[in-house]
Amino acid sequence: MERPNYTQDYDKVLRQLYNALIFLASMAVVLSAFLIYYGLTGNPFASWKKPETIAQKNTEASQTIAVAEMDERIENGIHLGTGLAVAEGFEVVRANCTVCHSGHLVAQNRATRDGWQEMIRWMQRTQGLWQLGDKEAVILDYLAANYAPQEMGRRANLNLEAIEWYILEE
Image 1 (cartoon, rainbow, N blue to C red):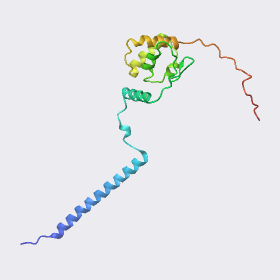
Image 2 (image 1 turned 90 degrees about the vertical axis):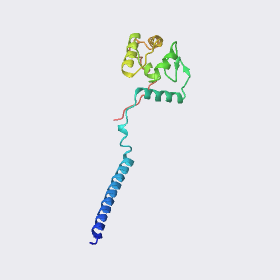
Image 3 (image 1 turned 120 degrees about the vertical axis):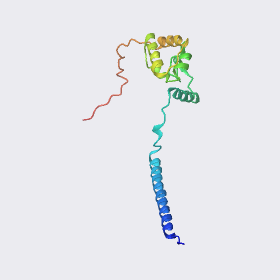
């Protein structure tokens, strides 16, 4: 009967343990490098996130508006919270337009009724604006009455006495 050769088995087991130890050390180095990179730059996988839909953005915007206190004061016929003129149809415009954007954006634009209607159609086509139904006529009446094009003459003269003049030094 032949004696088993334990030294060969022992060497084989040691080689396997050595290879396992090298593998674990390599994994530890890779994991450490990743954690250092993550700590320095933030989440490298954040850009892989699926982009938000318009509905999600609108929900977040409406929640922000609901949480924030709106300035309900009215000065010179302007609602200070939205920047919109307070007139017939104001509440409908406020409820439908300021869900997606600031009332100041509406107030800075001017258009005819047809121009406003074209803007609404564009928002419905490209921005996900819902069908307004019966409210559309009220909104168009409000916008055409309060934000119609204005004839602009030349600007007002400067009040020369109110200007604080100074002399340029050479």
